[in-house]
Length: 125
Image (cartoon, rainbow, N blue to C red; front, side):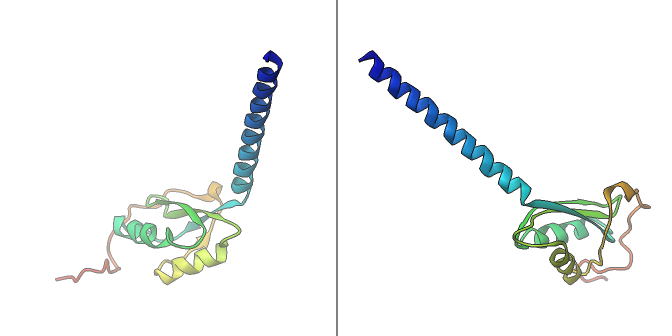
């Protein structure tokens, strides 16, 4: 009886270890399918950030977006099996944001952002 209980317990332990290993492998495979692109563009204000966040989030494969007005950059994390840098740049262009891919080490803080020169979608008086 004791040997039967011990063998069942051993089998349960082996199953738990196997499941944990498979789970870790699946997670690392998903992580390896991800990539990040950093675009430099003109972000005037919070409305510009909101426009990007609300629209680019719905692009196929996008998993995270970080906008930064002081450096005028948009960092997009995406799944390589669903989209690519060119498609993301085209999506940004459709929103009215001309982008240029940059290396994170070359990014510097730009001058203060202003709201002159573009339309936020609201009528001006």
